[in-house]
Image (cartoon, rainbow, N blue to C red; front, side, top):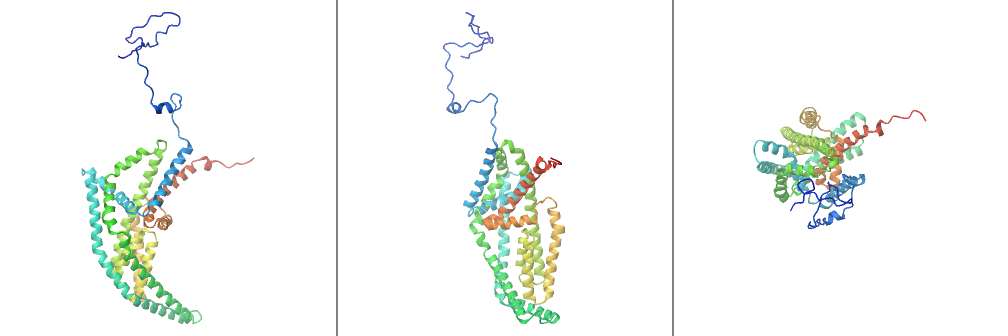
Length: 412
């Protein structure tokens, strides 16, 4: 039976004295059931004024973000040995997400689009491995077989150059002992470079073992790519409401910067690898294919990759050709590649969208590699991008704050 308050269909009780209830007071009958006991959680909460809202304190917010950052660092430290395929899969999913989004917009289911993209990526990787790896192994074999003759060739070329300088500057400047020391050091450098290249190519498969490359990374990449929009929406729903708009803007800025750098840099590395490999092979450098591919791949480290490839190619050209004409030809190839990269490829692919300074990228890559190995290299640029976005955000806050705008005092 529903109890109605007086004046809305229920009979009003007659007044019996001065203490009678007013007309607007609802009546209850003795048979009315007692009020239900509130739940234990409601009884435990302290009473709050009506309309009062919970407000987080500054200490709670700082503790939240500090706890999240500490938990991420702890997870990286504890699971760094097994995180590499998962981080690599996340990079692949992030790279392929725009293509999957376009395919889903034209009517292809997201899961099918993710499956086709991952299978295509695996097919391209396996095809490249099947085609290039035998060539690289054969070139490593040639390098190891001819390394002693390369050392002798470089030594003879350096000796001839020192003899010419000694004839022009006099024996007091370049004596015999200095010549022998220079020749020996040049041979040692060539031997070290050749051994390093052989170890790098021989240990490449050890870095990505077959099980990780063929199974774990593609499977994880497929699931991440399929569920990427839902994961983004879920993480957006978890953002603290107080800072949600600011965090979304920081995420958009990071995505814009990181996507431009990642996609542009990968395309730039691929183009440079093809150019260097083709040009060095065309001039007859025996290890031109290997050196060219490595030079293009290492170009994702600004300046360091190109300088390493240039020095290696110059040493091999001097050892093989024995003349300075081959060295000048190799130098012209690398200078042309740098000019094309700096004035054509990089501006067209990246433009002004990338705000990551080359020095910051180099520091991040080396710091990540020292701290976590290959996993740190994968995480270096994303972390550098996030740090750069946050730093610019706080710089804008500082430039708009009274701490910066407060005028200087002119008197006491």
